[in-house]
Length: 262
Image (cartoon, rainbow, N blue to C red; front, side):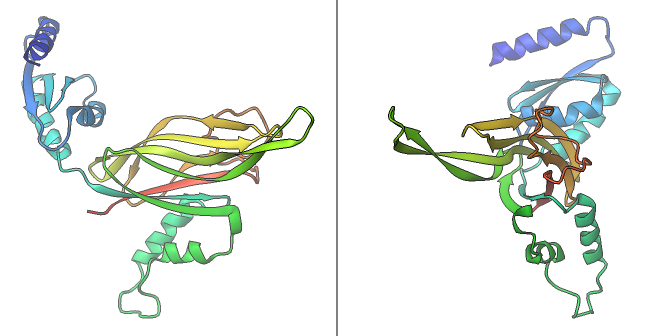
């Protein structure tokens, strides 16, 4: 480890030969590993600093004036990991704007009005409406930085036939729609690394899978629309995240909200 640290220092010092005003400092981390801090810190710094992940330490090369600012940001990020509640709605009708408007309406309800107080209006409203299979709500609790997975689907039987055309055995294949997500807090926002997928049983009894990867930054407690898992037979799209404004009635929109539950 000492040899590796020395090699990193030599590399950074070598690159700073033309910029004598820069300094290099090893900043110890207490609560989170450096590989989690770097992706949160790097977008805020741009080209003003170099960051190196060194396990429980973060190596920073920057100007003396910038170093104090970087340390202050690191102190905000290097905190105990939070428990997070991720709620996902897959719906053909509901939008993120509707859910956020309902949440704002709930906040504006007077506390001294017993006829309109109590309960979570979003949960009550969208769980009691009769939308059949057009809406599915799931929640998962996870730690910040820990992968979580949310999925829903069906199991399809598939028969194997003998050479004479008689069924011999039955296999069961699962077709699911969902996504894997890694949440990381950045102040009052959360950065989500999202990997959605959508399985579909084709006419030949085979599972076709569409997937994608994306990273988004959203506010804590607010609903956002990730996109849709389309069920159209069109082959022009090979991504699980497609235009959510299209008029295809088979479009299943994916809405997500992240809350801190510490």
